[in-house]
Length: 415
Image (cartoon, rainbow, N blue to C red; front, side):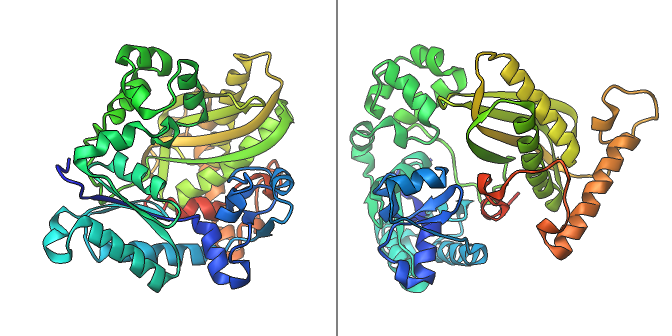
């Protein structure tokens, strides 16, 4: 861990919306959203009205009547995101890119060449604006966690350098929701015990946090509240999981809604896995209810899978289990699938032709292998003629309810 503030976190501001405003100058300064049925990204002008990513388009228009929706230019996102991160790469080879529009950098070894970390951050911001045409915020701190928080505080289009001598004063005054890993559910649980700032979190006994949030999450957040973060820059980062989700508004928790949604998501996740020659052993399904509470259910399989139909069936079983444990919940607002414990998709190890339980779900059986072969045929047709050229008849989910694969692929370059 750096003893001085030499970790940078560079984050392009409102990236997708900023790119659209760059491509079409008539949109500059106007409230815009990328998407349609659901908001995929919003400009700062739209955020001022309360518009947020993941929000249904109808609700966004209610909040901001003058909101303009635009389609996504995915190749431009990739090109401009790469160009911005390449500017950071001119100052150090120690870069960990964590998404299309943000990266960490360790500039410890670059000080003698380019000046102080603050000077490097200033130059990076100036060059990205001049060469790429986009605003970028940069946080500089002693740890990755604090550098990311600093870049959030710097937004929009700013720079924050956190002095190690006063880092806890800076950190402890901030609200808990700026911490990496604190979402709405965790924030609500902390609020129930009177914890609203990172300083209040830091003063909460570890055992109390573990009882409230669980041992892993409670211990992690307790350490981060004191800026104890030993993580170093990972230059060769690979995605540890692949996921997709669909916001449903408010839908009845019926087999029909759940089945078609999960088959749609499984098709997208499994397609991405196969495209990168990857497979995963652990499948997780998340179900969010109408009141925004979520439950998750997971299973770890004996063999890694990447077949669409196998993933869909496993996901449906997990969703049924989750709903069975909450019989009073009749409405759902979101479904999500993720696959983790990823492996290289090696040659299948065929199983002997005995009568096996769940034979169709075992990739090494004749029936399981046949499903994988069918998927590869579908992939080949889509690669040549486009995704809409062929698909599974059971997948019947409108595109407006799902985040396009192109967005997720941008963040999964290193899968």
